[in-house]
Amino acid sequence: MKIAEVSGQYNISQDTLRYYERVGLLPPVHRSLSGIREYNELDIRRVGFIKCMRSAGLSIEVLIEYMDLVQQGDGTIEARKEILQEQRDLLAARLQEMQKTLDLLNHKIVVYEKALLTKEKKSLKWNSRRHSNASNQMTHITIREYLYEKTVDWMDQVRDDQYRKGE
Image (tube, rainbow, N blue to C red):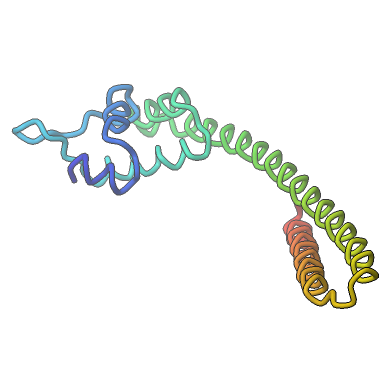
């Protein structure tokens, strides 16, 4: 597979693929007689692995160390496993932090929905005293109440799912 095809398949720039090769994340890719890179199946799998690990937040330095150990062979399996376990633990900690942030955001949205709902209900009561036909406003309130209830239900479901998973 040519560099443009690999670049398109993994949504990685060609410059990034060349960089990965230059810094040792990828071993030198075979080239045709005209000098064009020809990625084989193993190269492509490595690109996929690197992309996945980078998306998870692993640094280039950690990946270079890991790929260097891969190149050294089976004698480095324990060291590779340790690197992956350490990175997994770091990723799990980041995920917990992100979950806390998501929970806080969801809580704040519910608080604001409640505040808006209360404000609109007060406004509706005030306007209904001034105007006899407040049906349009009532429909708006009903929709907002429905969305509020669905948001709360969704948050309860997420909490229940987390509890069942033992988180």
